[in-house]
Length: 446
Image (cartoon, rainbow, N blue to C red):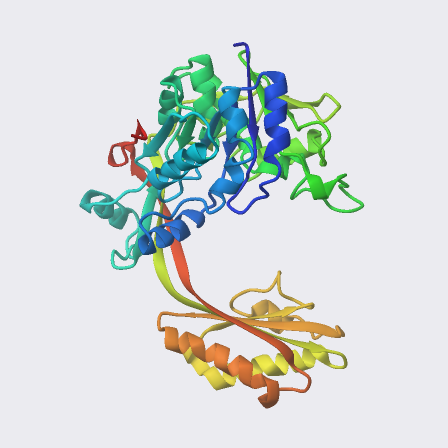
């Protein structure tokens, strides 16, 4: 009971699914306790909600079975609990899928806990958000409103004997805080312990980012075996130390630099990292490289949690039209710029377009086009022109696609490889909401 051992096998929806095997083997060999999958980015949940709107049985992680089939038997046999937000917009359906999978595999029926309370609706919620975000909330365009819930319900479910806890929107670190609370028996106001578990969760939540993914820069930050990155493991001791590692024999690297980068990733204020469970303070943290892909983190402090929860509100944002064409050889960029000018004049002010010259200026460009205008033409002989526009009217947005296609013969010399895309767009706004407007709960799958 002195050390809690946990591993992560996904950092976002669509992550690799073949990294779970070494993580589970490491947990089995070391007497580990919990496996997590983190599958939600900001927009993932709204996209899942749109899927559920089309099919009431869908709206959870599309790779759920690919994630669990390789590990479910081992986890059930070795009492390794599985905790994840792969329920996305439909935790009950995800739980039913897991139960079916277990039956198909001839396994014992897992006890599956289903979390609820992140999806918000009703007049009180809308009234509060309208006050907080005047003019930004359009009830006619709402896709979903979700609160970032904490670890309380995860901990309760695991203490009640859950083998699997299926959540929708919970704070990413809470996927670790909940199991750690259940393991050590920490209370909801043990701020120091909760802060330690929160930062362990923060180090694990992005999957291989702490083992070399999203870190590597050839010649500056070289990482071995990038094709076979190991997903991370964490040990949390009762006295407040965290050790980050990865499975033996996997690619990647865990050292002080990878851990420090992940510690600071998406942290606005290192002295006050706000989560639903605690306010974590990493301003005095010490990171020690133990060698052998093991790094110890200590010195984390915890303060009382915020009084409110963060919510994301997603709204339909019209149609996004994207179109591309390539120009190569002599005066490639000049021809691409001329093509963009043709599109502007043909489409007029009805469509406000973003123009990118991939191969010259695109990543550092901007929607207004000011950087493009200020950037002198280059001698690049390989340019991909990308133009994008948004409009509420689908037919108006489609005009961009038609005009781009017409550039084959109505545009500059040598254009080719046109590709077009039209898809609905989502807009999002964030706010804070009183906890009483977002009550959370959990129950076992019947």
